[in-house]
Length: 58
Image (cartoon, rainbow, N blue to C red; front, side, top):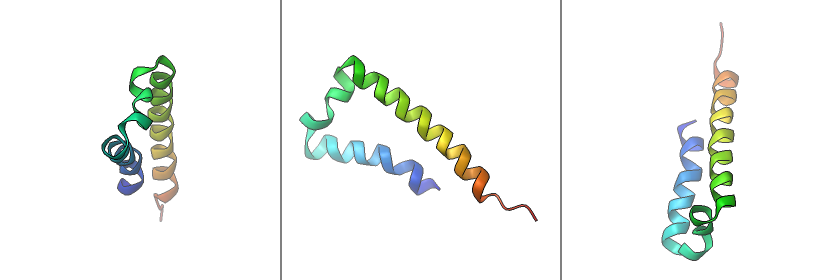
């Protein structure tokens, strides 16, 4: 589960290093800010869904 949560931020860092012009609009454009917030919210919701799915009750 940690791998799934770490993958999107890791990819953003890799893209910033390899091709900064491609990812920079996320940090400079108002629509990019909205998309970042939406991504963080959806990733957090996904974390709780995955945690609930993998929790085994015996």
